[in-house]
Amino acid sequence: MEHYFFDLHFGDEQVVDEDGVDHFDVGSAIYYGQRIADRIGRDADYRSLTVHVRTLQGSVLAIVAASAGRGYEQMALVGR
Image (cartoon, rainbow, N blue to C red; front, side, top):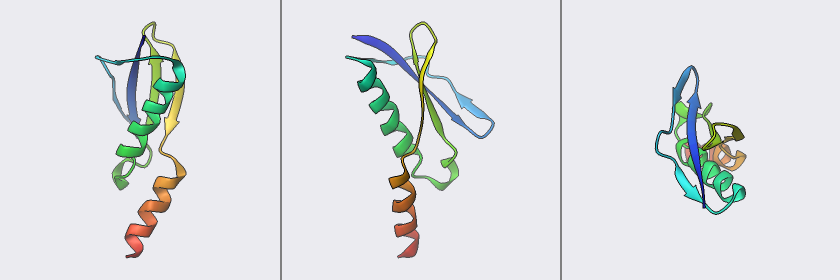
């Protein structure tokens, strides 16, 4: 198990993950980061959100944004 951190960046704001989460591999950590981005990215105020997935040593593995599907979901809800 490796320990990864998931920092949130939106606009000029940044929230640094101080606790982190254990994952079996890099792919699992990046998937987890994508899930975070998709959940928070549902809110119109956080469309610019990116999640920076980093290692215990501090190097950034990936920068993940909300998936395109979330934007389509928002449009469908607004259209109702």
